[in-house]
Length: 192
Image 1: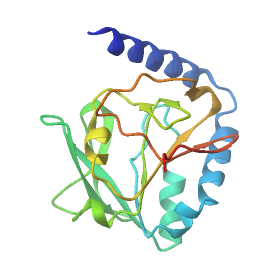
Image 2 (image 1 turned 60 degrees about the horizontal axis):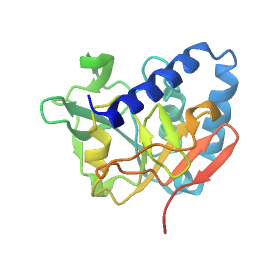
Image 3 (image 1 turned 45 degrees about the vertical axis):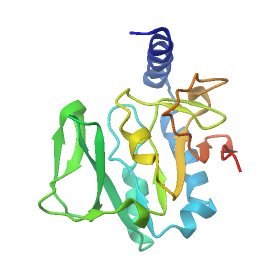
Image 4 (image 1 turned 180 degrees about the vertical axis):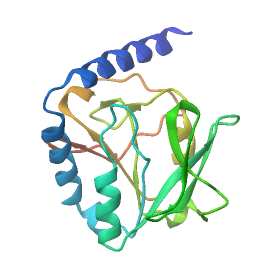
């Protein structure tokens, strides 16, 4: 493992440890979700891509339910661990999911249709550690960095204050998100 990878792994471990120890989780989670729902990018989006949360991640189920109530189309990823690619599939109430590698819930692809990335307005990008310029450290597979390389919709990540660090040493392939929604407010990361 090279020096940059070791630094990222240490940042990932430190934040995951803090995440597991927070005591006011529901308060932080509601604050982040409320701030997201108030953004123009959420309100204007018709199709929203997000993951089914796992482990310590911020719960995405309330966001999925609100999106459905608001008449939005929800799409969730299916990943291919062999080539680290992803596709997003239409997800509706009652659709069957299966738990795959790394405890990720994914759609049964025989049940749901693929939605092309140019038809996704807003992507909620998961991560563990974030910098104020939108770089992120996820779980290390690079799935989202690959998928987002030619994605033209808006990208948002959800983070608590303890997940935001001063710097992340990015690599050439890293794709920063446009906006960080944190429990204390929004950070606009887009370089325009």
